[in-house]
Image (cartoon, rainbow, N blue to C red):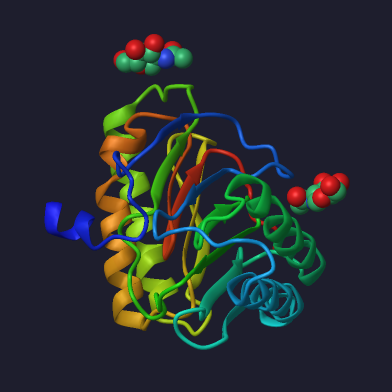
Length: 243
Ligand SMILES: *[C@@H]1O[C@H](CO)[C@@H](O)[C@H](O)[C@H]1NC(C)=O
Ligand SMILES: *[C@@H]1O[C@H](CO)[C@@H](O)[C@H](O)[C@H]1NC(C)=O
């Protein structure tokens, strides 16, 4: 862990942040600023970053994913944006545009940053992070309400998410959503998604790791998410996916 942290551009003293909140669509869910240094205004780095952001805002809504870089080392900027698998291209467009503005307020002159919303994530850095599983930028969200039969519920949730992870990692979109019956008329709804710079194999690894964190994240809760820079799993007892 310490060797890993030393090389990490995102220096989190705590890898995880436990957040108690109910999601509100338009607000960011969370963000991290990188510790890889800062830049100043009117420099090549700023210009490249602006290029990357505007290119991501333009490109991402077409397919829900984009990965771009601009400039030459040491001012080269790498960026990626992805929308939730079921987001419309209009929602995707609004979300990436807002993410791009908001991260500027939250991490004003950091060379890197990552921000998550319900509908999208946006990440940029002064080093190439593409095609690698992001194991550092991870946080949890959960519903404070407890479930009545946690043992069975956790088991069913894990089963659903394992199945969705299989499905997601086997498709080009690296996204899957579905549901299962819990007890009586109660259902569990879930989704699994990876950023599309990952290979199918790495997607699976990332999702398996996210699922393994459910006990620390959301044991016995009515809803929860393990949200990362490369993949996300989520479960709820209400439908949250738009088909
Ligand atoms: C985007 O920003 C606009 C203007 O600040 C705001 O009205 C809207 O709710 C935001 N949408 C999202 C999805 O964040
Ligand atoms: C849920 O359960 C935990 C542990 O059993 C308890 O501490 C907490 O107060 C409960 N939360 C609610 C909202 O009932």
